[in-house]
Length: 123
Length: 291
Image 1 (cartoon, rainbow over the protein chains, first blue to last red):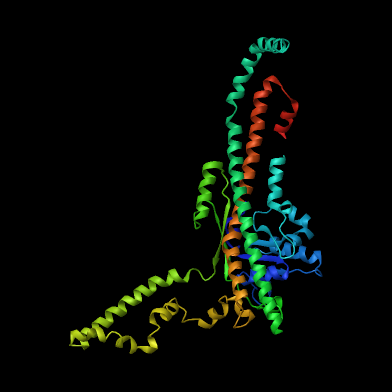
Image 2: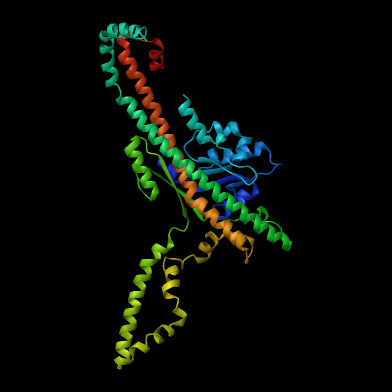
């Protein structure tokens, strides 16, 4: 289990999604850019040209490398592009939530939490 | 009709000695299954709450996207462009941040406290699930300022009355003087408000704090932002402050209960194995128990 100091430092939300999703969530004031040497952003705007490797790298950055992220929000259709990585993610912190996007409605069948539910009752 | 009772009656007559010995231990067993049942019942309650919050998030996101599209269409008419990443502030600072606590700490959360109570009653899980909250980053300035205001306002009131008593010999004219006294220190008029901002030791590094202080993201998009964009922001704030932390908390609680259920299932298998060890009912159960 994670130590208290570990999760108490996790104070930011991170977003991986299309432009409208990221813009909407940044409007709520969750966007953060770290001090100049690094200038690390806590969001990634994904479009059709974005490579899956870039999405996976951002996910790795938010979940394993950075220790200041508490919640990672990712569009479900973007999560589908790195589904294997999402399904194998088991850490308690940061927690990963799949959110709907404008063009791709939320599909409960793909939600990682509801997949866990089916696994629990299917065993 | 006559044939049916006959096949039933022989087993009932033969079985009583065997079933009477086997049924009592099965009726004593229920404690472990009932614990699993209560855990699963609690788990389903959490699942229901999760589904409800999911629907709420869907509603907020839909409204957010609609308003954003309206704002974009308005801007498209002006030829400015759409609200997107081109407008983001490269030095943005988070104005809403996550706070993570353990379920037993009871730091915050009204509805979450109820959920915790349910968890303790229903599940009785030993592991404390994380509780996520999202708060405005410059921590609750209103509550910190209030006592400062009160402390400052009282001495001001006392000094004004003292001045009135000392200066004005006409005690009857005092009601007309109080409005004059606050006018005299006009440069200091913002005492109750600005002093509250200044007294928390902002005099030392006001510029640095002003630079580091999170700004309203609406200002990235100009001074006069359209109404749909503000409405989109309000929906986004509702989603970020209320729904997303609840979903995260519920997900963590569900994971904790899942762990408890699996542990209880293992305990049940071991208990069955221990009881069935004398009879040697099935080897599979014993293998699972050791595995």
